[in-house]
Image (tube, rainbow, N blue to C red; front, side):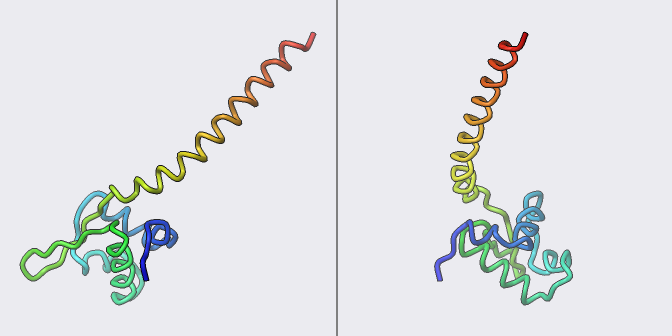
Length: 106
């Protein structure tokens, strides 16, 4: 199954993992220690994040480290930008309307 960034960020645990990895790379055990769910469940979340490119696995000796890859979040930013522009335009129009109404009042 081909996964995308939107599927990955749909889950709150995966969003929390991304936030955790934003400041530092961690090995799988260190990531799992931060959560109250099983290690296999964390491994599944990490696999999904890796499949869509939000997490990159790096091998250092015998350890595998997880590192966030925020370039893929650009897709989410671009998608959200169209709605941000839409609402900014609507709010600007509302502001203009309210300003006009204010000047009409005696």
